[in-house]
Length: 197
Ligand SMILES: [Zn+2]
Image (cartoon, rainbow, N blue to C red; front, side):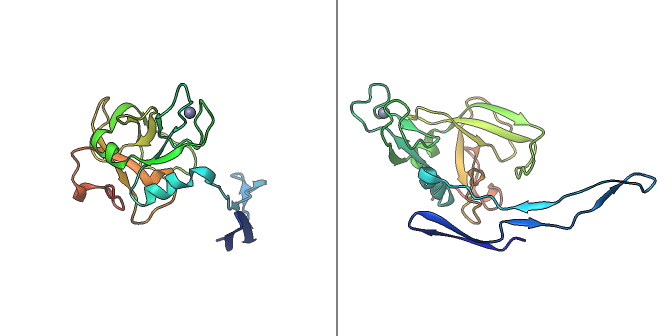
């Protein structure tokens, strides 16, 4: 395992330690034992800055859903529009948006707009397969949020759902947010997940 630390000093990342680790390689032999090649295992630690979107990711680890709103009165197309996915700037007037907590609205009004079931995934997938990707609409929110459905029920268009949050041992990634059918009881939630706090 890599041994490293990252500190934030005056708004900048200060990296120290090992971010690239070489592991022992292995020969690739054919059935007669002839050398054909080698494996080259390498471990890399990626750093990913959340920048202006950090409040959204911090929110889901605490069981809250943070969206943004354009508060620019001169914005012709999007004044008072609420955005989730979290947009740092309004796409129409380019002004900085205002953070708004829409957790209560999501609890009451979240519905499946459409969905997609994926039997296969890419490398490093951590979600249970088949993955039931759901596009969620919320009352009063201009945009549609992509997430995934947990629980036994299959997704349906128009289905009422509720957000759940991996608050117990968060990964600090988007997979800390998922949805379950609205009638799900707290005791039936997947391990590590809770309703909003
Ligand atoms: Zn705007």
